[in-house]
Image (cartoon, rainbow, N blue to C red; front, side, top):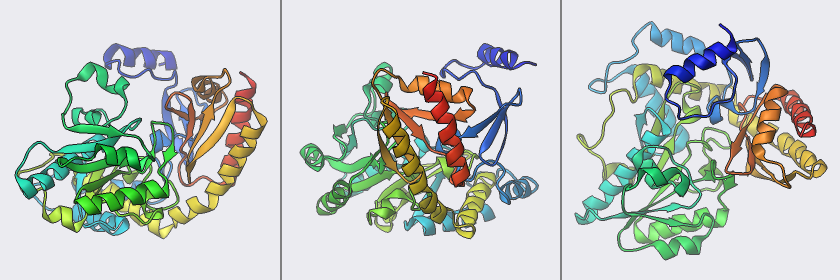
Length: 399
């Protein structure tokens, strides 16, 4: 079949909720993908920050194949070796106390919300508690996750959503304080806003939230679904601030392509929130997903992936800053580590650059309405940055 025939087949049978690019990707190797026509693409999107180790990283596939030969699923009525191993490793890496494995980032957010509300319920027996979330945030597409997503565009058609949510301005501590009431049980935010335009939290803001939560016994929930797992130069972005959340959500790179997420709780929250019967999932934490998590964390430690991000990120930043200086359509850069955003303007749309880059064999993403998002596999080298720059330069010159 031709590429067009595959696309037509998908459009005939798959619910049209995505405006996909006209590419049928077929295989990957390292930091490259190929389509069904054999064209190669340098991947600086990594499946939306999922493929931290790239495609077919040595040892990862073997770990998955080994687990397939044993058992894929047993349900959470029983223990499994991969569950025990993955749980220990992710708890150690995060500095938290307990983990609950989910199937996705949105599901992790749902669990975090439930844990926070149960914590507050056990304190006072009330069921009218509130959560403060941030404007321009994104936490997922399920009803609970949409309810704490600070973008009306995503919410409008699906109201009424979950009640008891107030919104404050990101990186504005006084804005958050103004929303705090006696009913506030949690403050939820991305440590680095992703879909909203690649905005890192300021140190003053994040530490201020931690102090505020400690003073009022409010839970601090940090969403590290996109910015976690080494992407910013620390295993989790909050670690670079010296701020420990009460609950943290992770997903995306946690399984390096295997659908898995998790929410983690500190000891205080774990001991006073969810108990048997409060929460569950049929597939979450199954042996196959946990084998992936365990392998990813082993590779991160053995091959010093986080340290590599710290080494390569300044080179990427330097090259992007040089590109911005040359082109009027590129306004500024912001981000941390290998989570970078370039603001596009002066009559050029970010979507035009994304499409032009694809023609040059470079996959990138957008964020917000005007940001070119670069979230490559964490294993990129300087030669890949140079290649990306060459392709992006050609793409911009075509506009």
